[in-house]
Amino acid sequence: MGSYELGVIFALFSVFGTAGNRVLLSKPLTHVDSRFATYLASLVGVALLFAADALLGGITHMFSAPSWELILFCTVGVLNSGVSRLLLYVAIRHLGANQAETLQSTTALFAFVFAITLLHEGISIEVLAGGILIVIGSVIVEARLSADNRRGNPTVGVVSALLSSLVFALVLVLIKAGLVSGYSYISAAAISSIAALAFNTLLYNPKKLTSDLTTTPRSIIVSMVAASSLIALSQIFRFGAFSYASAVVVSAIISTSPVLVVALNQAIANTSEIVKPRTLLSVGLVVVGGMLVSYYSKIG
Image (cartoon, rainbow, N blue to C red):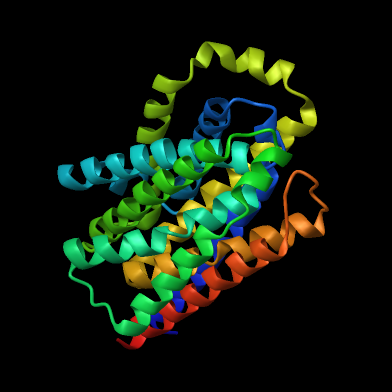
């Protein structure tokens, strides 16, 4: 199995973990503060990522990394599991997982720009066409209808999702740049989780954790912990994908996650999510665009 194929497999596993995270958080985020959800995700992430790194014997290697790599992956943690994640959770709170995840697929377009300017990766007409489809699919999401269904604000939801996408696109390129040296992707993910937890502690008072855990219904806490575990695993696979494939390819595959989010929400009959013809069309355009980008980035 070549590096491209292995990168694709890792990226697909990352998509499954990401989709599960969004679906499990859809209802809880209508009841809890997004900062609480983000902080809990960081706590679970640190525990799981350090356990995975220790299991594979990378802890010693982690702290012996060059200072520039430590700084880079700390920056990744703050931007990815801090800023971008919080913005996305705000978007899910107001728009729902179906619409927010579709909007975040504009990450692929932003990643094109960053990859070209920072990593000098090529882009063809076919790749550009795929990016345009992703943008069109994102523009026609059912923002207002979904926001009304969740008693949210469509403007806040859309702006938060797009800002999350922009930050996440930069994160994807930084991950790729940091892993070029061959540094362990699991150690990189673990380092980023520490920085993310420190950042999220600034936004959420840890003294409130016990109170929030005891006053929040058990079913919601279970969903949040499960969602946090999935996003931590997704992060491992995402870092792994960037160890083997280009930033453009991985970001394109990640952009297909909306179709799985919609399918899972339909499977569990999630009434807090809207699925209309426009939703299906937007998801379809995003997925086709992602496939175009992935394929033509491979041979271009």
